[in-house]
Length: 469
Image (tube, rainbow, N blue to C red; front, side, top):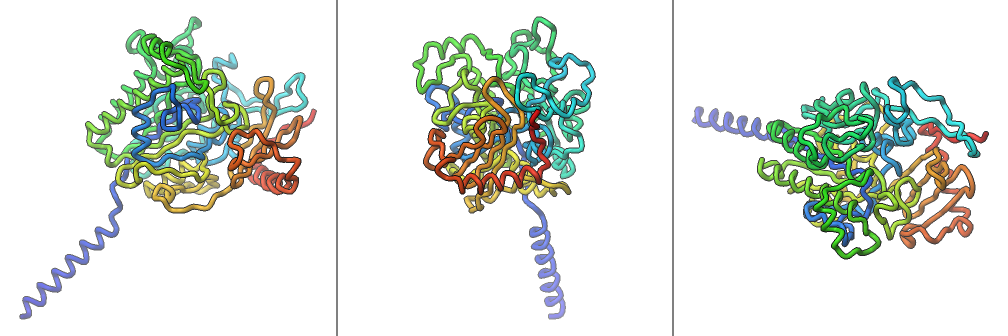
């Protein structure tokens, strides 16, 4: 009897210990792949309504996850949004509020800190100078995940600074093709122009090879080499940014296709399809390596589609502008078994939300500093989150008709504040997605309310403002 009691006690203790271990052991760390397409418009993929561009692989993956219909880039141009994705912080707080000029574009082998303000001859305002890099003391998702046991890799467009500011100095174990260049000078190998300017971080491989295809192969190789440990891959396509260059046989296909909804550019359409084929190659690799079940994929764009090559209707305008066509992006998140297929979310989210969300999903601690984004992972489980105001700050001139501006979206209300010319534009996006009905004169109280919130945010981020001359 005594032996039996001891046996029962030992058995109970063993079971209790096993239960405790089970409770303390977290789920297997998911692989994370962030797919960022350059200059892809809100309606430039089939699942968002394009009838001209063909994106079957992207559409299928989106249908197996959750799509976001109110997803925003933190800026209407690339570098600031990319900085926000990396850090979870608004561009105004980081200090990168415009696209970063590459070394060869400023004709200076050693980039020095620019003067505090640009004089802008012929303009009313002096505007804050944009830096030539994101400071290395910014803490990136890669740095955080690396401390949590992840292999980290950046592929494609970086555009956050030269040399000592490349991805390998911001937490990435491997950097393929990431540099200070915001666009290729040539999409075909050897990727050089007649002045010899080319990627300093991507060796030519096969003359005439298309850049999207090359980077797709690089992604496959990285996955196959690091499939036995958790990985985080920041896959940033250079397409569909200018120069508009695509494979001739694909251009012929779209030239012969009926044009619809003012999306008519055959070269641009071909570039979109090449990105889709690259996504298809990624999916095939994950399936072949039995990694689809434990890989979370985020799909996003860094700013709105460029007016001319594409059409963002029903959204107004496009890249660089404060209207929805400049800042609203196609977005979906795929995670088999964790996110219900064919679901959609209309809560406004921002590119600053990616870092805290990835950290929450991977049980990674946030850095000890202000993080502007929030963990939106509850939305992926169809749980509710309250809406919060979203902000933008672009204190620069761009082209002939974009003057410095700031924006707040709070609920369905959106206020654009300009620092030159007509000060305010107010829209109700619930009733006016195309931003055709300007309401500031009819709603002065709402303008004051939103402007006060915007002013408080600008102060809290120490945003640099334009100055009157």
